[in-house]
Structures are given as C-alpha cells and as structure tokens.
Amino acid sequence: MNASTSSATEPLVLGIETSCDETGIGIVRGRTLLSNTIASSMDEHARYGGVVPEVAARAHLEALQPSIEAALAESGVALADIDAVAVTSGPGLAGALMVGVGAAKALAVSLERPLYAVNHLVGHIAADILDDDAEPLEYPTVALLVSGGHTSLLLVRDLTTDVELLGETMDDAAGEAFDKVARLLGLPYPGGPEIDRAAASGDPTAIAFPRGLSRASDMAKHRYDFSFSGLKTAVARWVEQREAAGEPVPVADVAASFREAVVDVLVTKALAACRDHGVPRLLLGGGVIANRRLRDTALERGAAEGVTVRIPPLSLCTDNGAMIAALASELIMSGRQPSTLAFGADSTLPVTEIQVAESS
Amino acid sequence: MPDYPGRVILGIDTSLGSAVAVVEPDGVIRAQTVSADPRGHAEMIGTLIERALAEASIGPSDVTHVAAGMGPGPFTGLRVGIAAARTFALGRAVPVVPVVSHDAVALELLLHDALTGGYEDAADEPFAVVTDARRREFAYTLYRGLDADGLPVRLAEPALVPRDDLDAVLADAGAVRRDADRIPAAMLALAASRALAAGRTIGPADALYLRSPDVTLPHAPKRVGVPVLREPAGGAPRSIGDGERDEA
Ligand SMILES: [Zn+2]
Image 1 (cartoon, each protein chain N blue to C red):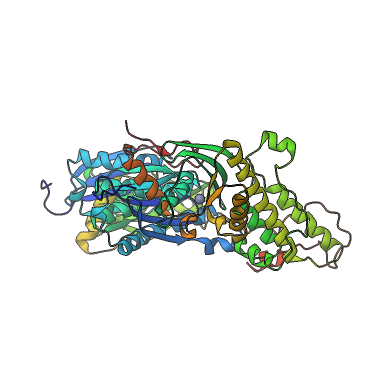
Image 2 (cartoon, rainbow over the protein chains, first blue to last red):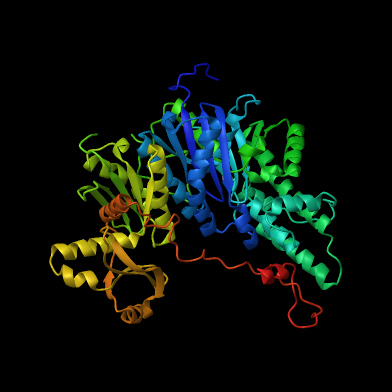
C-alpha cells in the first residue's frame, strides 16, 4: 500500500452502478471505503419471481439522486471535492445501465471531472481492495463471481490490465436457478435465502441431482463453464413425480440436495481452475456468496487443496457502487487516462475490457 | 462567465432523439445541439452537453437552471436525459425545472405562427402535438394558444392513442394534427424560463411513461413431461405456484 495521502495518489472517486436491480453509489478515497449506499428494487420484482428490466430501470431513475445525496452525507464529502466519477458500462441490463451512464456523464461534465467507464465483473474483484482487514490481494488469482445475473470464472493476473474469462454459465445464472427452484417449491423470491432456510433441516445427500457440465466429455470441452437449467429441470421432474404418485414433497431435502449440487459444481470447477493454472488463490464475489454453504464448502475444500479462499465483506459482494469507484481508483493510481464521453451501455461487455473508451 | 447576468438555462431532452440547448431568459438561444438518432441516447448525451456549453461559450458553473424534458417518449431513451438533467443540476447545486416535452414543440409552433403572421387565427385553433410512442401507438397532447405568461395552454394532458384511431380522436376534439419528429431543446429551456418567471410549475416531477412496465406475471412453473397419472377433480392438474398467479 502507498503511504502517501495526496489526492494525486489517493483519488476521491464517486462510483455509480446500475447494471441490475441495485442502484449503488460508492465513494472511495484511494483504497479506503467512505460510503457504500445501495437502493434495491428487489421488493418490486418479488411478485414477478425475477428481475423485470423495465421495473429495475424505472427504479434506478428515481433512486439515483437520493442515493448520491445519501452517499455524500454519509462520507462527509462535497461533490466539489470529488476527483473523478466512475460508472459501470456493462455487462448488465441495457436499459438499467443506460440510466447510470447518462447520469455519470452529466455529473462528470457538470463537475468538470474525469470519467472512468468500467467493467462490472472486474468491479466485483476490485471490491476486495476495500477490505481493510485483509492482506493485499495477490496475483494471479482465480475469481468465482456468482449472482442472479452472472456466473463467471476468471483468471486475474492484474486487476487493471489483465483479466481473462475462463468460463461462464451457458444458460441460467446460479442465482436465477435458486429463484426458479424456490418457485417450484412454493417459496418466495428471492430464492437464495429461502432455499437456504428450507435446506437447513434437509439432507444434502438425499437426492442425487445432476452436476451440470461435469461429465468427462463436458470437462474436456466446457471445463470452466456452468449450466444450471438441466439441474432445474431435474428438480422439477423429481417434484412432479412425487406429486403424481400422491406423495408429499420433502421440501427440506429437495432444497438441501439442490443447493449441494450447485455448490459442488461451483467449487469443483473453481478449484480445478486453481489447480490447472497453478494458482493457490481463489476470490469469491457476487450476491450468491451470501450463501453460507457455498462459502463454507469453498473454504473447506480450498484448504484441503492448499488454496487460500478470499471472501470480501458481504456488503461488498453484492452489486454496489463502491467496487466501481475502487476499480476506477486503481486505474487512476496506475496512471490510466479517463474515458472519453463517447461510450454507451454494453450489456455484453467482455471481461477483458476492464476500462471502456480510454482516451488516447 | 459574465456575458450573462441572470438566468442561464440548460435544456436537455431525450424523448425523441437527443437534444441539448443553452438559452438566456429573454429567449436568446446561445447553443442548440441535436442527435436525430432514435437510439444512442446514452452514447450521445455527454458529448451533446459538452458541445452545447462550448458553443454557448460558458462553463458548467454558469448554468443556473436545468430544464428536463419529462416525456412522453420511449422509456429507455427518455430516462437518459432525465437522469442527466438531474445529476448535472446536482453537480452545480442548481434546480431542475421539469417540462412536458410536447410543450416545447407547441411553444415552437405558436412562436413560429406569431412570427409568420396568422397569429390571430392560429392562437385560438386547438392543435395536437403528436409523436411516435412505438407499439402502434401515438402520444399526443392538445393545445390552444399561449397564456399570459407566454406558455402554451394545454387543453388535455399527454395521452396515448392507437395509431389508427388518432385522426378520429383529433376530429372529435376539433384539433389540427401537428406531428413532431424532434423536440426543440431551446424551446424546452424557454418554456422553463417563462415558468420560472411566472413562479409556476409546468411539468411533472416524474417521467411521463404513460404505460405500465411491460410485464406479465409469471406462469406457474412449466411441467417438464412426467405423465400425469391422476387428473385432479375439476380439470387441469395444478402445479405448485398456481395460487400465487391467481392472487396477483
Ligand atoms: Zn454483479
């Protein structure tokens, strides 16, 4: 860490994140977190059983200004003191991203400050930097990012210059699978915490649900990719068979066995990536990390294989603006130029594009 | 900065294409930048604001008010301009003045009619500003003349109508149809300026979507093909979750 405290080396950055259903405003000075303000529209999506893009985008527009004001108040910072504005350009929901992009551009022009447009997934990795209690992140590291919007396995050689996508989900994100199976079991949205609660009294070995893309042939072709739609179908079929036979559905056992299948595949593939690349470090990120079973399994099996598993505080694992500000702060401290104003929302932004539209 | 005593209004509208203008309170247009691209609002908005300020030879700190076009307009693009207007204003700690986007078109038409003669006739003739609302619908707002504050008189608030029904609806209202394919941001700013001078609020605080979010409640989980052995009494087999759909 740099001992200097001048603003040139420790920029004060305001980050705006609107890629999914959380309006996140973060304020960071260098590697120090000053505010992590989040307004979520989750409750508005509950009746639909999943994130509705238009509902999320409308909520972002309404939440943005109050969230910025709350973040400033919490951190005791005035907008005039901000050195740079940062924003998520992608990946994410296009209409939701556009609200943040429009807001960030106008704020940067208004304040006459540089703007950094960054990658949401790499932001999840940058969240780790804000963890005061942890040793600095070492490179290279494997990163497993799991949420309702993405399930990605990355190899991070350098946060600001070299991130490689090893694999990602071919269909549903892991968080989506939790939501859909919860629905199937008659549990409310969001599914993650509900499945967790139901699974607490269940037997994770009761039902042998399939592990997607884990057969030998799949491991040759899709070694680091994930698929959860087959698992979801298997759960549905199992439940239907029970119902058709007029037998009660053991919700706790189904939830525990389903969760075990998801966790097993996530951790197995992440540790395979560590082994294959000779990287004894695994970083977890994304909202599904809130799942205790996933964290415990990763820590346990990581330790058995000599892999150090890092888990940032959960408030920094879910989507937030602080991680976007943190990534921009790292870019600034490494001497990168700001983004031009000519970029848009990119719903499929590849992880290799850590910063978008850097000016030459 | 001080070419301008008094108000300097930045107008931003992305309800149709993207448009930004800088206007002085007496109606002098210092800058007007436009992108006709019906998409690309997020791409264009920063550049348009920067260009408008440069053309007006002012800095952001010279702006005293931001006029925001609140729609109606296609949602995705509309939000970009409103978000931009709000954060620009926040950055300078100046107020946002919301304006119905159609008001800008109406004001332009009425001022144009006044300049080109025929003001007496035009002033009392009801007309409708009509814009494309997609999905085979138009958005329209009925107007007649200017009031004492120099603002267009809205006879009815913005509404949607199926494309094929528009002409019949306007005939009933006795209104002439005036289609618009752009929103003049300078007129948006001028309307805001006149509202400020009169101490009036003329636009809504929230976006004029005119449509609920396009969502349908999810169906019960689809069955995946296990043969149903027993039909429950009363028809189709029910899956877990059916009740949820019915209640909402
Ligand atoms: Zn995320």
